[in-house]
Length: 208
Image 1 (cartoon, rainbow, N blue to C red):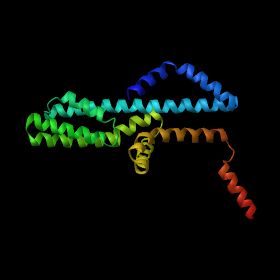
Image 2: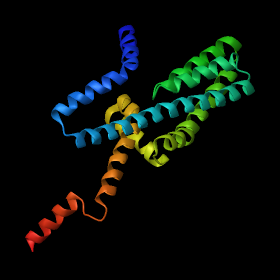
Image 3: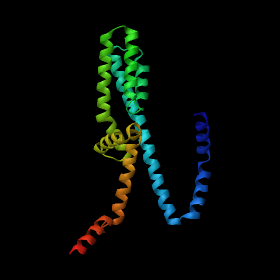
Image 4: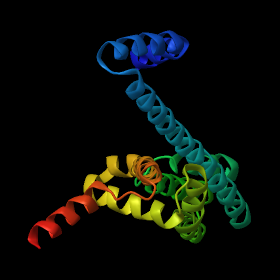
């Protein structure tokens, strides 16, 4: 982990030089027009990934604020620290809410000694997580990566169903990148038919 951190710092510091070297290497094997094409789409893909990470951080802040308000109302000790912890755990897909909720309930039970307060805290956490997962997060992510909320939820469902934890991590930015490619392809076609439609027309004409 330490070596990865050190290497990442050096890569960021020398990213300009690395990009120039990479461009020179690509010019040895690819035409200039294709290099420009790859550069444009790679840049857009990186922007989508950056926007997705930024939206996740914004969502974590929103969850922290909601949890702080709820914890303060019901009298949970260390409400600010626990709310910040819940926001941090919210960055972890799938297991984050479970870990954060369990820690908050245990600390509340140990600090107050009241089982009812711990149960109320757990119920509030479940409500906040459901509201965030189905309303807040899809809206924030949709605005940042250019996807409608329904597509965000669909991407997460498909990604988690096919690839589990990894699918949850990459499903939304991957869906946004695929959408970008499809939209650009359709715009470049204009009034022309796609390759699939042309093939279908050829098959139909052969049958006739």
